Length: 286
Image (cartoon, rainbow, N blue to C red; front, side, top):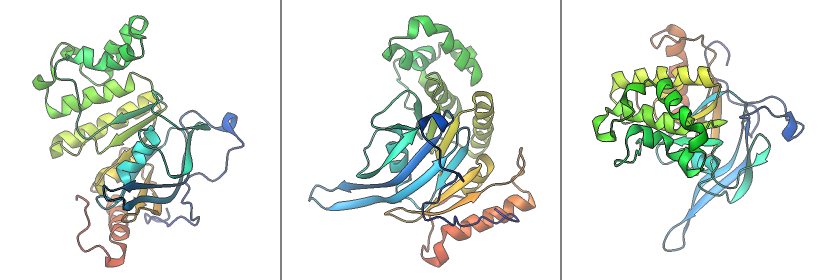
């Protein structure tokens, strides 16, 4: 980015790193490579619906990337592919040089809704992953650690219905973090929260990122949120989605949402999202 205006990536692959690693040993923990990935879905009548088309993206370890674009363009599909919940029709995805073929604890996923188990208290919800992996007994202290990390240590015996929306989302973060993922995927995790809670949670996510040094990729419809949190913003076209541009966010932290540079960059990203007027009613939030 130069002078607060995002530059369109010169490469058709829209890569965010400048050099190709020599191999798995050359990549730092949490480095993601998405290489020419395409994905379609089949309707009941057999019609193929393309969701992603020739997506390529490199994300270095420790980076925070936001993915933004019109509703239904394939943003969440991209996250599900990275999580291993879906398989690409073409291309490949690698984390630290290893091919992604299935879900794994090294890739945590947090959804828009916390999806806590209502019959389990907070301690049991956060501990669920450890128990599923049969490592709870030797890692029991981790539950308290991560509840403390997200500010919920005093609510370990509370049930989901006793928590506010922000507290439930922090619990979902703790449940994902307890597996110590190399990569944390966030699928509109703050979309259901009120504005005040949302801003507090944005700061919470930044604090956790700094504390854990985890690579994070977040899908959002909120341009301000993307610019406040991210090192780079990946802007996708309407489906079948391609990467329109990757905008670098070279703003000092903590960022002033009303600052001149922030607003200038916000205006530039909104202009890109409108694709020269092709989308009359863009599906982002301001």
